Length: 219
Image 1 (spheres, helix red, strand yellow):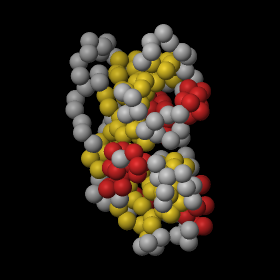
Image 2: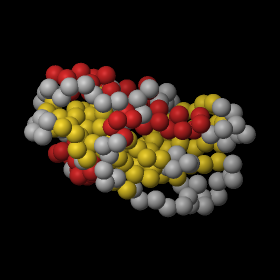
Image 3: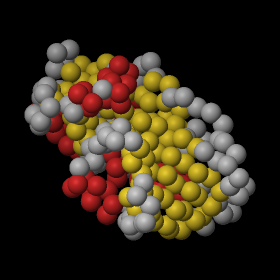
């Protein structure tokens, strides 16, 4: 399974013909919150790979530039890179060596919200807008059930690795951002299931065209 996120970069919004490849990786702390984003970009203008923290930041702050990026699988990125004349897509351990100037993300200790000591609350924040089709696909991928709360698209729950999970998809503002809020009630087993669930949910929403911004912890 690919650990990194791959994007095709187009010259104009709505043009699905890529002119570059962007690769990102979220750098995580031990509790699975985001410490920063590493990134590298291939451009036909240079014919090579270079660090791209500026592009990475712009995707999260500039809707016009965000419209140029399409989330794809590693396999699709490899195929398009070869078609553009960039040769074989480097393995992920090779891409690691190309990362420069990490985009650091703001961090703070989790807030005390009165949650039980064995529970944690996370927020995966996304930039962009979900259309009706993307919203339907996101709801299916997250197995959401509708709620009576107009601020919440839906909620779901599951257990894995001895831990209990609940999550919900929320819209933040009008066309500003979306988030997946996850509450985990930790059992006695290793927390690897938490990391896997946060990764799955981040990818499920990213595949619908939103750009993941950070992973925060509130408790």
